[in-house]
Length: 328
Image (cartoon, rainbow, N blue to C red):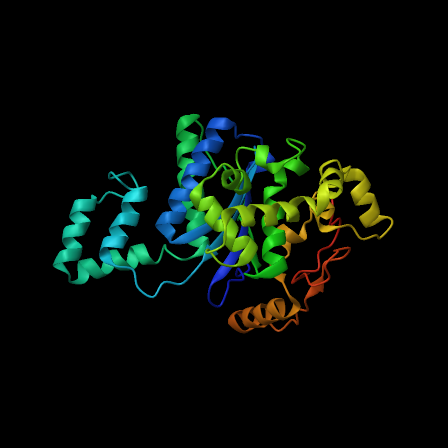
């Protein structure tokens, strides 16, 4: 039986990750371009905000902000519907004009349309389901293949929507191509949110403002400078050290010497807590969501927040105490 996913009690920010079957490297430039476009399209339809993302050749990461909406007008429903279903398809046979007329006429049919669409919005599971299904359909048709594209369920971590936890998770996602040895600087990697922000993409810059300052009114240049400091540390020496860190040496310090590394260096290691820790944030944030999850599922086991070992900032805690190798 599947374990119920931990979700926010109100506005929630989630790091979601999904990998291809058997980790096959199936995505090249064309596939990544299509997947990037679909991420933004499905986010628009779902009413969620993409804060950052990263696409690799066999998996993808996305950090999204899900806010409950008090009310969505019929005109907004149809605008969102057109984003995904401009024309009738195998899975959505109704035309937009017919649906618009039924909404104007009102009655039971209009209520049913609203219910079906609204249940797919402002929900992290529905967002990921729609995204993965749409991309799988396109990929299998394009490559004349059959069968599943994605391995199992997607992984998700509920992230505290302010301060160190949010910024650290975003940086961890944007640094994926650096950890993979593809680039030394994520701004040079085509398929991540930070590179989009550096290139001047307005939505990406807006998201970066929220990540760094928790508000959208800040200057884009200030947000970029602050976030880059998070990625590389302070000062030119720190930038050089972080950019050239040997991952094996970093892991040795963490595992064998039980040392502490600066955040900019630590984030160049793969940290399982950031994909499998269930909840990431302050101790109070993690504890409150653990208690809420226990009440909603009827679980009796007591879950205690766990400090991330060897983390330079001791304020980060997670829900799950992972077994096996944490850093790689």
